[in-house]
Amino acid sequence: PPPGPRNQVRKWRQSIRAEERTLDRQIRTIDQEELKAKKMLKQVAKKGDTGACRTLAKELLHTRRHKDRLHTSKAQLNSVSMQLQNQLGAFAAVAPSSPRNCVCRRGDHSWPRGGGQGPQHADSDFGPRRT
Image (cartoon, rainbow, N blue to C red; front, side):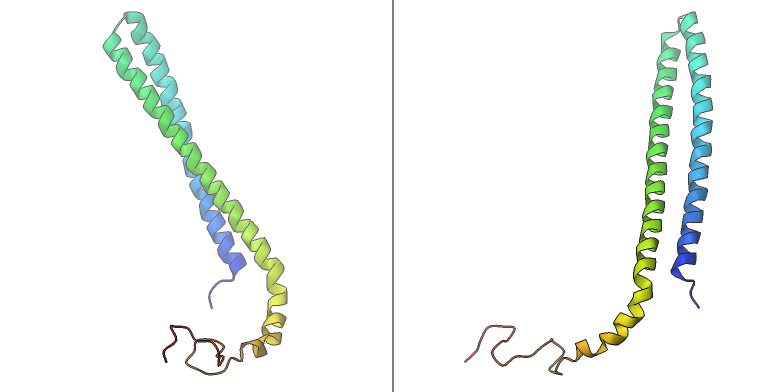
């Protein structure tokens, strides 16, 4: 039998949290690289090498942009996880009453058999009137 919605949401949220942890690890390594690049930039600036300073500054910008992208993707993952949890709560609130509704409303779908287009009335048709 397929897993219930609660178990499925639990597995999805578990995998989302794992992805968030990997993003955190990547952010930490980028922070460390950024600190190293700053140190190198200061050392090269003291020596007066403008070409190396320029390349290190570009590298710093790239690392910061990459870190910003990782932060936004982590926020999106967190948002998806929260939406899953909210949807599960809404489903749990509706699910206990749905079997009763299903049994009570079985008679509502007794449409006249007329080609499967819904209720058939003598005075309405679904196209241009031809005489």
